[in-house]
Length: 368
Image (cartoon, rainbow, N blue to C red; front, side, top):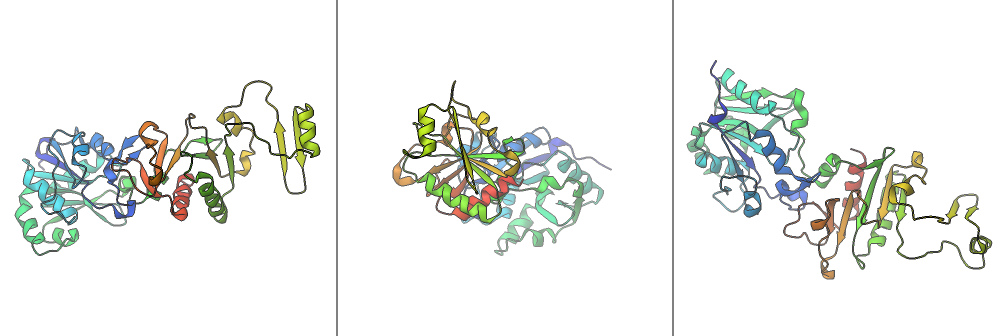
């Protein structure tokens, strides 16, 4: 049985879609754990193929930073789907084989290409497509570039279904059921949240909010707490105050005793208690404050403030306020919630006015 060498393969990473379920963001550029999604793909295949192409219909200058070859665009401007990217790559490729991969599957491994190559030769096929054990994965494929004329003729009929074009040729199926993680793709903000590395203190996830004054941050947090409470999430809310604050009222016994000099005041009733603890040395840091919580009773800790501490945060922005973007200088921002997505936003985007969407993102984040 002959062998397909790496020098016979050009890879194309498909990043030309609309990403409608990701609020229109360009998925390949979104950062996952401080690395763009497309970089995960490149790092796996760069030593496995002769050259790499990126098919992108927008943000070409940003994509160009990742590879040496020019970015390729579809021949049409109306987002005709993956096959348009196939066709353009087949026009450009100078090798007999084309490896096709999507830009939003950061878990792939080199075993994918090895299996596709083996099965294409073994089954004497023109196209080899991955199967995850449950269904065909049509955008994970190895095919012969001399099929270009067939593909162009198919696209000329205005049909865009990959499976139907595949069926016109000798098709091999590669069983990759033992590598199901390869096919985890990030189609929604919730998909992204479920793969984000979660900072935890004794298994309780932590998530903060970064925003400028006037963003109505606290109002949004209150709405989120109500939403998460409906989902049976037990959470703590921790806020950093920039000034002295009082949680008691002048004239109350506990207030007067504290200001008379008591180091600690514990107020208790039938349904709650509050502890006021006077600092005798320096202010406690964020993670020391976490230790004051009853962590066994919590599913999540929401944090407001502590902007210089290192933990995951959601940035809140309202366009009318015209504030600078926090994520540009803070790698700890994992998501951007605003009423308009910045042109070069590389964090997953949420609608600041959609409490349910933000809440579901948080649910996926804590339940990964």
